[in-house]
Each structure stands twice: as C-alpha cells, then as structure tokens.
Amino acid sequence: MKLLEGKTAIITGASRGIGKAIAIKFAEEGCNIAFTDLFDDENMKNTEAELNAMGVKAKGFASNAASFEDTDRVVNEIVAEFGAVDALVNNAGITKDTLLMRMTEDQWDAVINVNLKSVFNFTKAAQKIMLKQRSGSIINMSSVVGVSGNAGQSNYSASKAGIIGFTKSIAKELGSRGIRSNAIAPGFIITEMTAKIPEDARKQWEAAIPLKRGGTTEEVAKVALFLASDLSSYVSGQVINVCGAMNT
Image 1: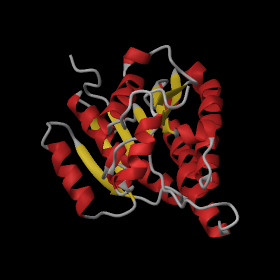
Image 2: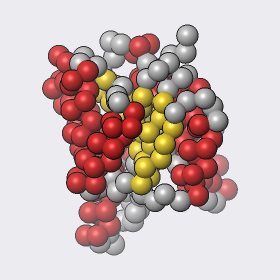
Image 3: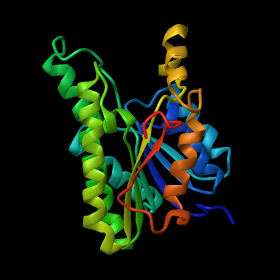
C-alpha cells in the first residue's frame, strides 16, 4: 500500500520548485493534492494536469497566502472540494535580499508577510478540520538560514527563524489532538532560483558543503513525505536540516 493512499494534502506555492517536487512525491504515494499559488497561470495548469495524470485528484487554487481573509476562503473551498486535510505543507516563500543598511520597510514587510504570516494564515485555517479529525501533519518550510542566519538576508532569516518557533509552539498546542507539526530546513537546493547564481559562486557554495554538491528538490520532497506519512508518527516539534551537513 502507498504511504499516503487516500489522503489529502494542501501544499502552498506548489506550481514550481520544491513545492512542485513535494506535490509530485505525495501524488506518487497516492495522495490527493490541493495546491496554491499566487496566480492561476500556465505553471499552475501544467502542474494540475501533471498531477491528475498520476491517478490522484489534484486541483490548483489561486491564493494570496499573505492575506488572512483570502487564505480562509481558499481553505474552505479546498475542504468543500476534497472533504479532508490530512497534511498541510506551508511552502510559499519569497526573497528580497540586501544588506540591512539598504533594506526598505517594504522589502522587510513583504518577506515577513509572505514567508511567516502565510504559515499562520494556513495553519489557523486548516487546523479547524484537523481538530475535528483529531489527526493531521503540519510541515513548515524553514531554511538553514533560519537556523544560523546569513548576511544580506536578515528579513528572510527572521521569517524562517520565526517559522521554527511557530512550528515548535503548534506541536505543543495541538499534540493532544493527534496533530503533529514539524519544519524542514533546506540548505543549498538546486532550483530555478539557485540556477541563476553565477557558476563561480555556485562552486564556492558546493565546496563549503561536506557532501560537495547542492541538494535536489526531490531530496527535500522525500523528507516531507516522511513527515506527512505514518513513518513519522512519533515525530513532532522537530526541525530537520536537509543540507548535506552544511549546517550541523
């Protein structure tokens, strides 16, 4: 039997990158997928078609994850369509990197709202059905930058560190109802975004990683699968670094 057979997951920011890799991995294990992104564009349509072709029910929803009202609306739509929420993957995120001396208030607010407030928005909306079910797995995408910090990313680092504190608190709040909450902290993962980094800079990154390479989106997705499934039934309140020992 597949690990997530007949279950339903909400995955935010899943039209590309790590979020899409998680959606594909979950679908391979029999999970129905409700995923969100900011726009109902070609990426969303292609991802929806790809997932449906795998024999599960999948649907994309346009949603502003930083908006409390919009998130509540879309989660209600998802519950009406799918009937359950067994796993929530809070993956939506952006970067606006610059040194603090150059950082604007808008750059700070945008990253905090999309990366951190979205986790509050979706968890608060999804917990209602999880509490009724007395079960659920919440998986929040943090970063090694949220664990150890990084120059030029004070806004991003603060948002990802905040996710870790939120994750641990929710694990303690909801554990008695059978709901687990964990975070994943990816390191240098090869995505469309990191592919734009100049080759010499990328080689410097890789040389500093004990495994001597960047990670793949599928490698992050496998950890998300572990946390969503019963394989991790006694794992809650934890942060799992997926970084090739870059951050130990």
